[in-house]
Image (cartoon, rainbow, N blue to C red; front, side, top):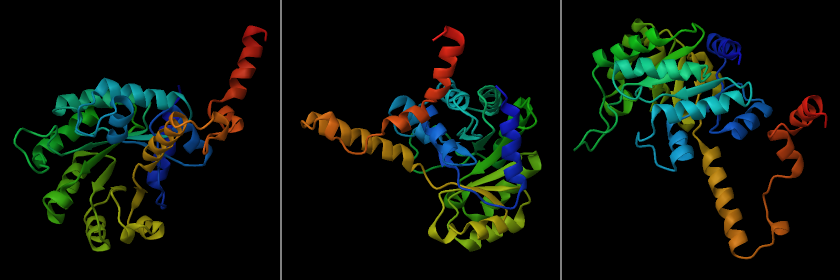
Length: 286
C-alpha cells in the first residue's frame, strides 16, 4: 500500500491556511463513506476504537495491537488519509516508540500522543497529567520510532481543563521544542484561550472538543488551526440504527417494511461491488 502519498496529502493540509473538519470513522465501510462524501481526512479515535473492537467505554482497556489492527483495516479499504488518537502511547516512552512503529506500519498518516496519566491510577478521582519532562520524553521517543518522515506526530494535551491555560501553553511549547509536527489541544472553549495558544506557539494546531464559540472555520484557520474535531456522532448514529432495526424485527415488523435501511445501490458502492465484479471476470473467467 502507498501510505506515503496520503501522508503527504495530510501534511499539505497542515501546511495550508484552511481549517477542516475530519470525518469520524471506525471501520472500513465508514471510512469509504467519508471518502466518497469528500472528507479530506478521517479521524479514528481511541474511544470509537474501544467501542468498535470491544464494545467497551473509553477506559484504556484496548491494546495497541487491537487498535493498530483496526487502523490497518480502515486504511487498506480506501485512500482516505487517517489521523488516529494513540492515547498515551500505551505505556511509557518506550511503549510510545513502539506505538509509532506499529501505527506507521498500519498506514496512518498522523497520530497524536497525549500527556494524560493513563490508565487511571488507583484511587484517582480526577484526570491527572504526567510531568512536562515525561511528556517530552514520550514525544522524543515517538519521533525516534518514526521511519517515514512524512508521518505526522502531534503532541496532545488536555491541560487547559486540568491545570489551566498557562500550563497548556507551557506543555505545547515544550512539545514544539521536542520536534513534533503539530499540537493537539483538547478542551479549549473560548476565543481568548485559542488566541493565547496561537500567539505562544508556531506549529499547526488541532482542536478537540470545540464549542459554538469555536465553530467558525475562517476564524480557526486564521489562528493556525488546521483540523477541528466535531465529535464521533457517526458511531452513535450507527448504534441507534442497529438498535431500532433489530427492535423492529423483534417486534414483528416485516423486513420489507423497515425504515432507514441502505438500498442495494448504496451497499454496492460502499462494498466496491463493481471492483469485485471486474476482478471476478478478469481472474476467475466469470
